[in-house]
Image 1 (cartoon, one colour):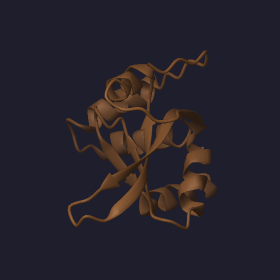
Image 2: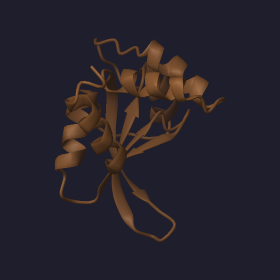
Image 3: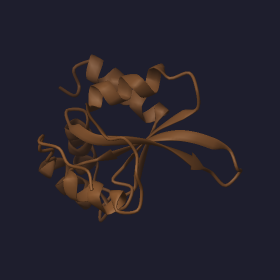
Length: 130
């Protein structure tokens, strides 16, 4: 199991994520994205295989240690603690086949792709999300 002295707890983000899984409410979506861009995650990088057999590297982002442990029991990879800003910069600056990140892969399993990251970055630059 992965151990760190830094506690990562995104309770508000997790609650909003759970709400999104049960509703398609625009206000909840907006609050989710606002919380997402100010969060810090436990992250790992993996290689994924898609249906057309193409390979893409994907970051895995975990909202907390509990979500990490769901995945880590079956897998091993180096873990980093990254802010959303650092994670999104790495993904957007990547020139290989990094496709984005998956939030809580053994839970909500939400893929945030490069296009969405770019759109959120633009909104953040315009001070829409602070």
